[in-house]
Structure formats: structure tokens, C-alpha cells
Amino acid sequence: MIKAATLLASEEGGSNPLIPHTYELVVGIFSFAVVAFFLIKVLVPRIQKTLAERTDAIEGGIKRAEEAQAEAQALQKQYRDHLAEARHEAARLREEAREQAAQIKAELREEAQAEARRLIEAAHAQIEADRQQAFAQLRTEIGRLSTDLATRIVGESLEDEARQRRTVDRFLDELENSTAEAVR
Image: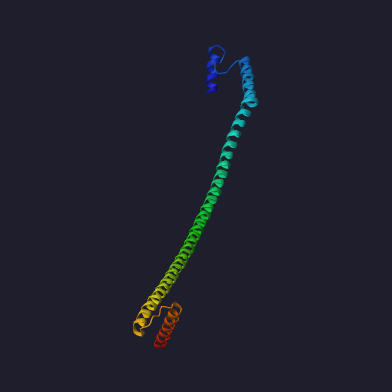
């Protein structure tokens, strides 16, 4: 086809429109060299730098993501460990509280039993004191009644107080001895 175009151009007047003139070729080659130089020296390094930065950013992002994931897993493990430790501590504290409650309950029961024993002993002591007082009053009353009766029976006065006491005491001692022997 180029041959046909060359033949056609030589028949018309000598210049072929498809083949450029020499000065156009020189200007075109020079322009191409300037553009190629500009591309190679300025644009290609910038493009390579941008691509390298993107590659680093992507790889760094992946690394950071992996590190963040590893850190998250470590934190999660640490959280689980702390949670397990807290549960263990809570169980231990509950057990200690149960033991303390049982100990306090036992101490309160002991104190209540001791207080009950003390009250019973105080009541027994009071009863014994009341019995002794009643016995003393009864003894005095029996002594007075027996001296009155003896005075009436004997016919003489037993007003002498010392004699009266000895007689009553002797009578009551004999009465106690005979009661004690009957109980045996």
C-alpha cells in the first residue's frame, strides 16, 4: 500500500503526503526525545515512588492489621484470664463468706447456749435462795408455833429465847435426819 501511495504521489507532483519532510522528522524526534526524557526522569520516578508508597501502605496495613489482630487476641486472652481469675476469686470469697457465716452461727449458738445455761443457773440459784429463805421463815414459824404448842402442853412458859431456839433446832434436826433416812 505504501508503494501505491508513493506512485500516486510521484504522478501528482512529487511529494507524498504520507512521508513527512526531513525537518518534521527532526522536530518530531526531538519532541519525542524531550517527552521521553521528561517521562523517564520526572514522571516515572514519581509513579514508581507512588506505587512503592502504595505497596508499602498496603503491606504496612496488612502488617498493622496482623499486629492489631495479634494484640486483640492477646488482649482477649488476657481478658479471659482475668475473667477466670475473677470468677475463681469470687468463688473463693463466697466460700470464705459461707465459712464465716457458719463460724458466726456456731459462735452465736454457743453464746446463746452459754446465756441459757447462765440464766438457768441464775434461776436455780434464785430458787435455792428462795427455798432457803422459805425454809428459814418456815423454821422460824415452826419454832414459834412449836413453842406455843409446847407452852400449852407443858403448861410452863418457854419464853426463854435461847432455850426455845435449842429445842426447836434439835427438833428440826431430828426431823431432817429421819426424812433423809426415809429417802435412802
